[in-house]
Image (cartoon, rainbow, N blue to C red; front, side, top):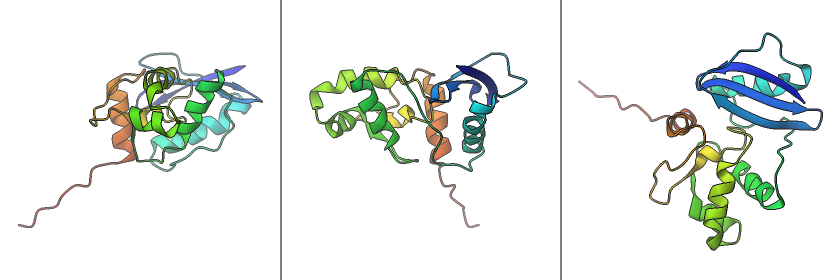
Length: 157
């Protein structure tokens, strides 16, 4: 597995992957920035930088997250949430066919190894609250605002 670290508006991103795809993307408050990006990771780094610059709304590099069949199913459902939209944990559970699985879905959401690209930040509470995010609620809020910026109102004088 290759690894690289680069600076983002949310902290230092770490990308881990190989020829089979990107296995993990996380962001931390601190860390060492890589001086070179392995060839196999360059496309992912470029696409994430474009996302943070506001020039990309979806990703098309190969993913290879490791998880159970259920986790893979939940993570695939997350990928299907459109850019700039949100879904509740309850609605995600319904979409997956089992409303009673809401806790398992929420737990799997929290174990998502591919932050941002598999958009677990787009899952919110039924009441619209920003419940749970492994990277911290401030990052979840930032990502949602980045994807759906408020329209500023202009006042006529």
